[in-house]
Image (cartoon, rainbow, N blue to C red; front, side, top):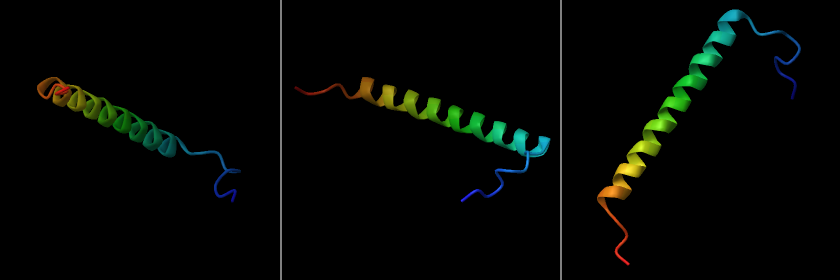
Length: 46
């Protein structure tokens, strides 16, 4: 279970993780914006 837990991550690993997290957040923001736009274009019919 404890793969890689004992060794401290290298600066390159930290940077990769940081970039990945930022990319995921940006992706989520874009998807939420698209969902809002889609909802505005297609209001509920009831």
